[in-house]
Length: 425
Image (cartoon, rainbow, N blue to C red; front, side):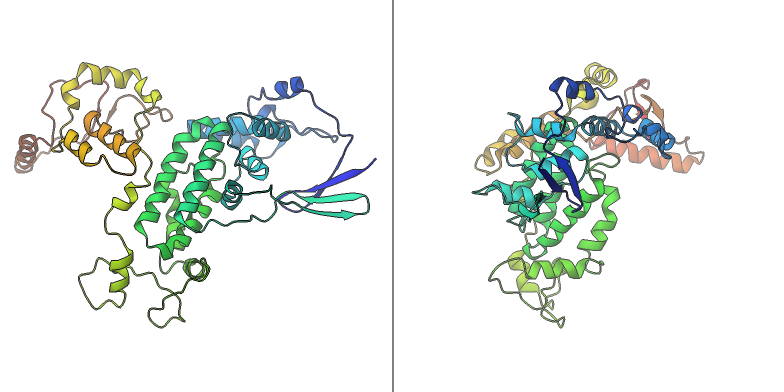
């Protein structure tokens, strides 16, 4: 009986046999009925281990109960997929809705809840032949490395956008609830590219890798948890960050035949100038800054994803729907922009979906990315401060309030507080 050895990502050989027991689709369907970690057992020839026997089981149960809905859904699907990841992967590969550009190694990452290799996806977008696997033999045993080195590398903003769009579609097949999260993250990284000169784009690519490795499959954190990524910004994008030198070296060697320009006395390394908003003309990089940096968001709008409309879950919220339908005067759309004229002026803009989303927001209002279903957050919250006791202070606040009323910045008083309102200071 000949055998084959497959070496996984960690390069540890695992022996399998051609006479491996075949599972029927019925048994696979039965395994997919997973209710959570309590139902998960290790399917092997050894004694089965129940998750309840793991030392972190009780803490994990508490963490799952208080986790955000998106993280809970992700965990539930991961527990389901891990029962038979090989079968799940085969179903994805033969699916008619899964993007064919996702290589098998990255389907493994998606269904196991780890970060996807963007280089591997980018390589598969334009490959002529299937990726060549590293194969060796030891006697009658075949050793196969399942994740060959990617043929291409993501080096530019366009490379990144092309590959990440495929990741969005692939991940959304296995985790449909994460599609909006991935789109918002894509818009965030694209805005970073637009705000930086091209020589610093390798740093942004490095930032993306760090963030996605940290978030992994979205079991605990989301790609939209911006406050969790500040340390990565400091380490990678800041000029004094611990990864700043690495990013600069990547920038200088990322293009074939390109020449690096030297500013200052730092060994010929191209420096990233952060003085482009200075009025001083003594900056040695002033010419480069003015020629290579866009000081507006116009470039960003050409690649920006459309602004999202309120999701169906928010529109279906009875409290929100009731207060809007019964009090239309409180939600009037007030803007000095002539939307029809604005839309006609942008008729030749290269990113029409984004233009349409902006004009829709100007007419109907923009969704502030609010999640009114978060956890056990109550429908009514009183966060107001007590009225000031000092009559002078009270009169000052009233005068400022009246000024805002007169300028149309505050809505007019509407009498009794509605039960669905959240009172602010």
